[in-house]
Length: 418
Image (cartoon, rainbow, N blue to C red; front, side, top):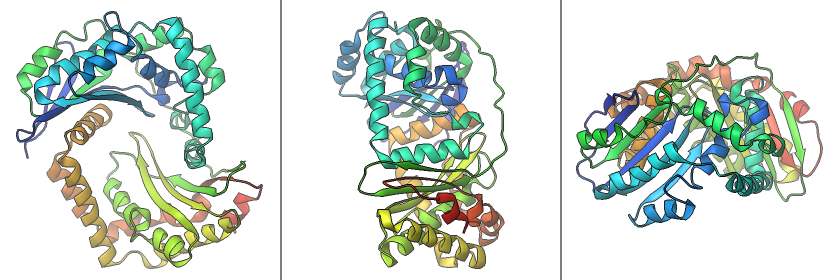
């Protein structure tokens, strides 16, 4: 597989390109190193608000024209805001790549942030907040993430709240966008069948309206202390999350965490699934996930359970953590987990959008792009010994924060630590 080519345009924007000649499609993403970690409480949710407003009109396209100009190409366009980045992307057949990219570039450079559109979109985001509140599993995940990273920027809510969003006027959003969307904070990633020279020439003069650099921020750290939260709602099922600190994206133990997470709760053969669902019949959905960021990480265990089975589910989770602590993992589990992760990675390699996301995120947050061989080697190098080294981080229930969305009040901390 061809290595990813990285070029820096004269304007300072970096472009990561992976040419895949045997496909007839291409995907391009404009990545901005700005997310909820960059926000103050007064303007919580402003990065996500900006992302929404980018689709509401530019100096030459209204909102309908933005959508129609991509639909005419048969393209797929969207965007997302995360804790550390915002990405605007489009996927098209390769002959329409530049036309699709032109729409994205127009949005990023020329959006007008009309005050009337802002009023309407603020209401849309209010509805999005309500939607999250009405989805107890999402609410549970969001709450436990805030708790794990409490006191640090990673604990900031991506969507914000009604109070902070009400403070964001047109002047506030323009000032923030102008300071955040700078050429040194932008990466363009492209994957698929395209000409590297043509795409770079096309991009060269498209970022001139943006400032060259922005002020660098130092993210504060905070001592980690497990906390607990029970959210009472009139729902038919309880949702439980237990989470503790994990590892960052560039931590040498990243692949070890990924392999162990897969063993514990990443598939139907995983320990949590087999114990909590198959053997005990306590949950329809139970899994674990490893979320890594550029500075920190989080290991999260989730179960959706009957209201009267919360304590049993927690005991089942603790049982598996204890078995991991005492016995480690088997050779068969290690082999199977690594093969699953490698297969999932290779499947993603065959999708141009997945490749665009991977190379863009890595270059933006880590200033490097991993080759396929490096990823496969990282997975293959995980051993039982390296898993034994990280077990102490995960095996002690006292290290976990916990949140539960349920229909009753109870002492979650006592159950976790008993």
